Length: 85
Image (cartoon, rainbow, N blue to C red; front, side, top):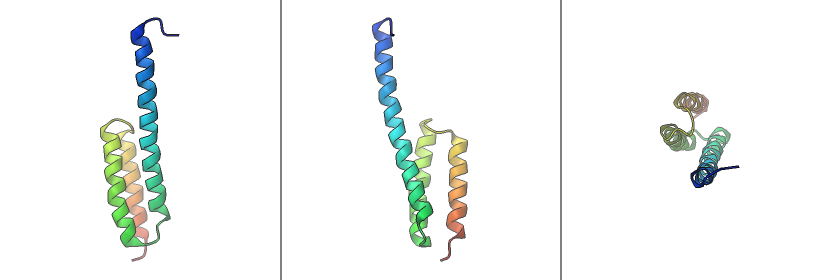
């Protein structure tokens, strides 16, 4: 239990941040699933740009580690390149 007002406030702030960050991560994860499910190369390339930008935003804000974002981008890039035109 928090012993003072500032500790109570920190708990409230942390809960808000945790839910906000979780929503952002879930959104990006859904975008990645949609990209992997896409069979059309042109559509996949346009989705790839959106996913890469979203991953960079998450990494820049510290929601995910920058190396994890780089790994995701690399794997998704390989997937898109493997699709037939």
